[in-house]
Amino acid sequence: MVGHLQRLAIFVDVQNVYYTSRQAFGRHFDYHAFWARFASGREVVVANAYAVDRGDPRQRQFQEILRGIGFSVKLKPFIQRRDGSAKGDWDVGITLDAMEVGPRVDHVVLVSGDGDFDLLVTRLRERCGVTVTVVGVASLTADSLVRVASDFVPIEGPLLL
Image (tube, rainbow, N blue to C red; front, side):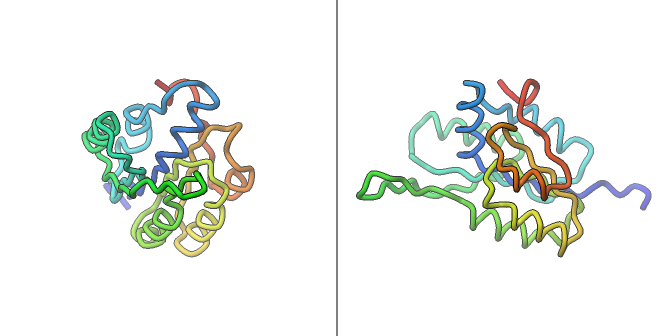
């Protein structure tokens, strides 16, 4: 099709990318560089960044930066359990949103190294026929997720601040 921009959906697991980038490199993920690399020249149908809301001012500032780039920021309250563990994961929300938009796009970019998403990536490719690029820290991304992705882009150099 002439003149058809590739339709793109972006899903960012903010907690995962924050902790893995910090653990592997002691640096932060560069959302501006990411957007320039993946969204440029494409029709962005959905761009969701999934985060946990702890209500602190620096976090709110970060969320505003994400919105300024072009992301919709989806927030879930941070829950501290009685045993001291925390709950704040968006796996089900990301999966539902991705399966909903899958039939309407050509390409999905998932920013997460979480192996729980391997089934989602497989389903998107098989049922929706979309290309799925996984973006994650190579040493901290589940092998199962890398295997099922159409392609894997490591978070390194130009994607770090």
